[in-house]
Length: 83
Image 1: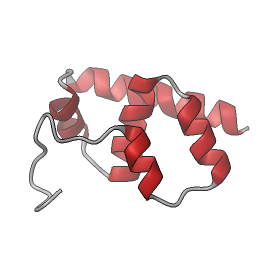
Image 2: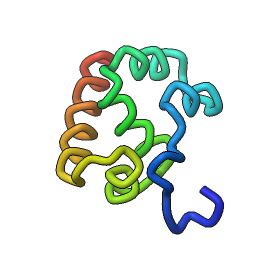
Image 3: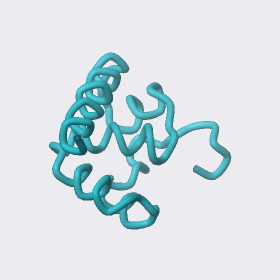
Image 4: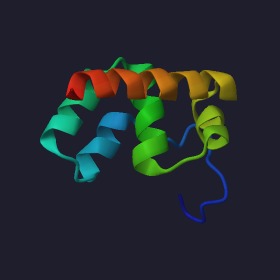
């Protein structure tokens, strides 16, 4: 994000592109790639990129409640895959 103030709705890169540019453990990266796309997208945008729930909602065009749900469920799936 250029100035960190906002996100353009069409500007969010796919989670796979983000994962290719950050250093995560191989097991974490593999587990993230196994998540369904919507959950992977939300978790990566929040936990890897550092966007707020509002920024994610705007970027992907869904309500904030949907973002919260996807992040919660995505993190749960990720924990299960890593345990």
